Length: 276
Length: 318
Image (cartoon, rainbow over all chains, first blue to last red; front, side, top):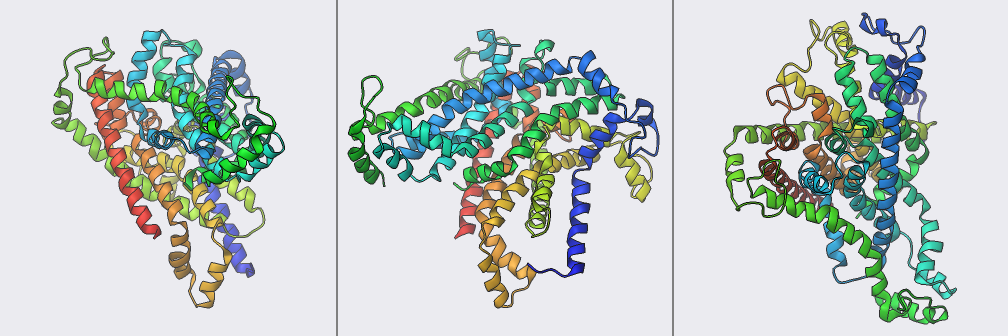
């Protein structure tokens, strides 16, 4: 594409302005977290910290429950995603490759379940978990998150498997692979980007949850996730915005880093699931 | 297609047949058994953690269930919850708020998503970096986004008030969360900020799938930028737009975290959507049966909207 100089300048200016506006909250989170607390109650606000206060972070890491909450978030997200991926990969492969009685119905239900309001689902889950004595335990959260991840992952992976030609397994079987072998040694390695993107999305879904965590873990502060902790910080330290912003940044960081690495696959994966 | 693959499998299979439970899964006779076997774990899990709870919720909505008794068939069936719901002004208020939010948030975030997608679809140096930055808010957890915005919108020391006063848009600091109109705007701002990146990602992927030749052909025919946008771009990405619209609508309809942490549904119910009302009734007032009936109504509305949109957008494609 050939562009004249004024056109290029216009394009880049628009880009910079748009990105600055849209990412301002992220910038503001970083700047606030480094500001000394007295600077937060001054007008005009400081747009660049004159002397960054790194001890806000060390304080948060060594003197609060924040690291523990982050660990809980990570633990729940990894286990919930792991279990969900295990069953979803098999189900998605089955839905993609086999024509079975009832298979279509299962596929349709999975799609429909995306419509279930979580605020409704949480009512029976609350009763069930209480009867099972799971209230306050991280398992309640893992199961609740699987209700969202399994349908999503199955649908997204089905789209991915659909895009892989069947000839690949047939070739593998001609070479002596069993159907299992064809799935594990040929199809799964080929769909590694799709698997990674799906798992990342599952991790994000779990990590971002607030509804289930605040309801099931309300009376078990030791098991809180990062999001519950931050929402509580907001109530407790109402004016210590540097502390709240530092905690927020720590909670956002894992997802942001994962996003940077897997962004291109994520785009491919999302569209694979959506094209159907 | 499946016949073809089965006959090919038949030729291929007999070489090595390890089998599971003594069944030779590679043979065409049992090919579908493997399919069922692979599907079974997910089907059982979904049955246990989605279907059963959903049926339980529907059952609860027909009972007078309080906090203490939460099991199947606890008491007599009754329509009392639904009668109470449809005669409650709070319910109609929640319907109105949800509808308004749906309209405003969906429109603005679709516009921002479309605009940003078109922008980073241009060819320029550093394009992939720009694409990454544009969709970055996608990677910020909702609670974190809300807490950050609460600070930005702070009445006394918030940076937005400072900017607005500096530009001269407002005379004095706006107390965002104390009046219905500004609280609704605050919810809209945060939801748009969290919602547009997904839309942008989806539309960008749609734009990339349009063959360059279409635009060249349109140019040859003398179409200007706007004509090319309305007659080439829009029809080509209509399916993607449809799916994106449905997913965005469903998200706004059911989102809990953003509104709950930002305003808690207030002031005076100005931001109380059906999702917030369901949660409040269930876990603040412990009226589980009543809350479930709101959930069931939400579910039905969601299903109707999606069915309608699916129909609409599939018309738009052909």
